[in-house]
View (cartoon, each protein chain N blue to C red):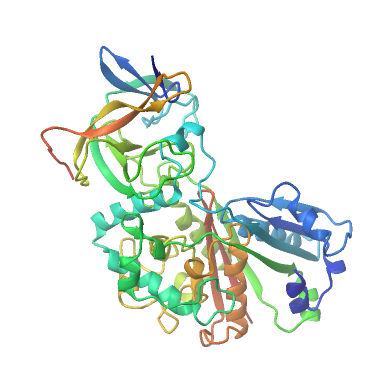
Length: 357
Length: 136
């Protein structure tokens, strides 16, 4: 928060409301953090939406400035993750019989997609290798080491076909952003970035296979074989494009959820960067590398930065802001003007579109 | 004594395992486990039905590391089974060495351990059909 305030050329006393995202911080975590910054009496609201928690908090902050209620609002994400598999809320019997394993649901969807579309494990490894390569230029990444596709394929198998290097590791972290009205932004610093759209969608019943809603990680354990509704990420992106008036071709840089390499590939499709069933082809022809036609996860993605849950979306949004300001040293996408950050968590998905003048 | 891992999931009818499901007469969707409100059309035209649990593997994975609170052994095969009633349900596979997408499977009840009183705890699982017939 102090770094964000310094960046914005504002003080903690300027913040009129705070939204704090956390999944493991416990009750009242935002108020607790505020005791280290100063008790200023502002409303503080804690927000939890798994790995999309801070996108959800960002959206609330955006709404409270856009509505005219406040001029300057803070968003924060804080978490320290326990080790092991992440599991969404589930019933005790589901945990006992091995149903509450998030990576297993990713693998189920991935395996079927491979069967339907011809993707191979090598494509998954290409995504991971690309992200780990990008991470070597990001001082904020948890892992800053390059891996070859062979090392990634030979790594410990977690849930077939996904090896451990194809997943975002659990970790801890913090992030912050300041949202304010345009006149305050102009006065505060000359590095203003506009929020064009922030969307958030939860599942429909009967989404196409491969979407987050078929993640039976929620207590509902069936999905429809008859219905083919658009996925939660597809709907979140379509809404963001409608609000912002831009299309996928206008996006210069994107940070997409890569909870696993497979998630990044399905999100290429959901964001409209390619046709359905062709996401892995983008990886195949290197289209999403830093010098590719649509660079994705120049930060190294969650695969390199880790998934601290509460702050995860703010990590993505921060990277887009740095890219749009031309300040992503060593990994800068030349001339990036419009950036997109997509988060997925709690079977939901959200998209932020940012624009630098 | 044999006890189910959770009430309301399955029962045995003359030795045949059955899943306890709900069918929405308004939109035609079928749900497992049972629910009172249709998660698709939000209506309450719900009938209680049972499923015989014969279907095919829609997709599968192998879980290699023991999840927290899991009482079975690893590795285990975790799958989505597509049933002719138009739904896919999650389930573990038993007695299956070589899972394949499309492989025909049937519903079985298996002991997954004992409670503190020594009762066998039963859970539903899926097992390949003998003839290994396959659909895509």
